[in-house]
Each structure stands twice: as structure tokens, then as C-alpha cells.
Length: 375
Image (cartoon, rainbow, N blue to C red; front, side, top):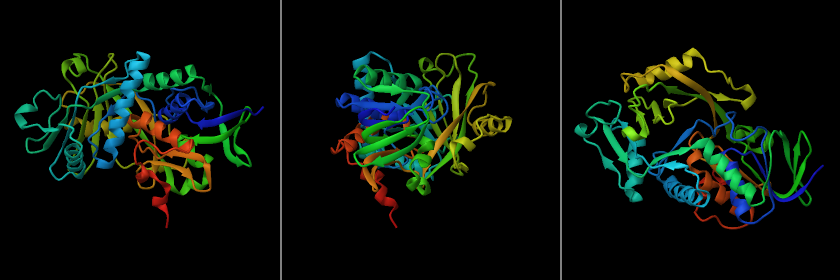
């Protein structure tokens, strides 16, 4: 039987959990729905740890949003007592020809982030090796988030503030009605005055008008054994991003809790039509490809102790989408987070909640508007 709410949030990964959290803090009647039980490993919000960086190689325009997110993560920690973020610093490395590193440096200078260039002699303790004539940049104020714990904390505080959470509920359609939005689901629908759709790879299926702008890519991430615990935060090992001469990149995070050093690939992937078609298994060739990429920088990688598949919900231009639908302004969409959206979650949720309630977001996020795709 349908129930009435001010706002329904569809999808409770990092962005959806943060949107529900912001709406609950705003005092509105809100419900969040997810087809699984978050935090889960079916989408793009898992993997134990996620980078938080503010000097942004994807574009300096992201840096204010990352800074706002960092502030909000700290505020959530202070309110809840949960430890969500470790400020360890982060190292970027690559040839001087890398546009990503050039933009990272520009963003750091533009926003006063205290970046420094590491000379060859200062690189011995990084835990990886790169050519001496390469560019190496340290962002001291960066670090990493505890991914699943962060989602649990967002949802826990939202629920404590009165938000309703429904899990294991597959949403079939998001449909405007005369007086609001109907969320059709496989075990009873929900009515709301407005909706926020944060369904990751499932967004195109729920909002067909956006399908030409969205796709899903498959990635794999792997944890390599660190038996000597030489690459832990306590040992000074920092998150890293290394890009080679062809623009292929690996990124990684420290061994924490004994799970191993997490390493993933940041390369152009093959678009899938839907999450249902993505191969969820991790194959020997996935591990072999990543090991071959990483072995150049890490001469002593141990065996893989764990692997996971991750979905990258991509927008057509690889920038985020955050806007109200032109066809119905009562529906806000937050989509296409393109493999790097987790860190921004509380700032994106804050902005999505403001938009949904007819208020101006704290930051100018017009770069994420749907109008950029207009012919």
C-alpha cells in the first residue's frame, strides 16, 4: 500500500544515503529505498576505503565541492563519534606531460591546498618506485574514508532523525503524478511530493529520458598481501595515484586491518548496457592485468588475497549530473558519478536536498546541470 512522504530517495549508496541524511537533517518526512541492503557490494559504494582528495586532476572546479565534503565528513564524525576519515596525505606521480598532474597542481595552487613537489631524494619512503625525472606531488591534507562505515553512519543518523529506510525493495519506476511522484516497487509503492533518484547504474532504467547520457562500466579492485605490514598508515604509507606515459593509471590505498594493499585501475572501460549485464565475477585475467600495471611501481607485491567487482556509473562527458529533471522539476537526479563520487557524498547530498526543497545549494554546481547536454 502506498504511503505519503515529503521526499522519496531511490538508491542508498553513498550519494543516496547522504541525500536522505541531508533531508532528515532538514526536518522533512523522507523515505529511502534500495534494492539491496546497504552498505552492499552490488554498486559503486563499497571497497572498504575510498580516497578523499581536494586537489582535483579531473578539474579544479571539483575542488570546492571536495573541500565542502571534507568539512561535512568531519562534522558527521563530531556528531556521531564514528571515525570515518584518516588524513594521511596522498601522493600523485607521473610524467611531466600528464594533464592530470598538471591540473592537480593547478587546483592545489588555486585553492591554497599546500601541495609540494617531492624531489627524487624524498621519495624513498613512498612504498613505490617511479622514474627520477617524473613529477611527484604530495597533497598533505588528503587521505581516505572508511566506505561501508560511512554509509552505515549516514543512514544511522538519518534514521535517528526520523527518516524511514526500506531495503530489499526493487524500484520498478519513478512516475510523476498530478500531486507528486509515485515510486513503483515490487512489494508496494510509495507516494511522495518529490523524489531524488541516486540509483547509480540503475538510473537509466528508472529515468529513460536520461538513458542516452548514461552508461555503466565494469572495474575490478584487488587487495595484495602485506605480510610485513610495511604499507600501513602507521608505517607512513599513503594513498597514491600513478599515471604512466600512455595515460593509464593505477591508484591504491594502505593496508588497514590486515586486509592488504588495495589497488585498482583507473582507465577507460567498456560500456555495459545495464548493471544486470555486468560480469560480476573476478577472473584470472583481471588480476593479471592489474598486477602487470602495478608491478612496474611495486617490485614486491604479494599474492592477491581478495578481489571485488565495482560498477562505474558514467555520464557521457564523465562529469557528474546533479539537477532537477527538465520534464518534471519535482524529480532531482544525482547520477554519473563516474568512479570518483564517493568522497563528495555529503556535499552532493546536501546540494540534492536543497534543490529538491526549492533552495539554492551552498555551492555553485551549475557545471553538473543537464543543460550542458542540450543540442
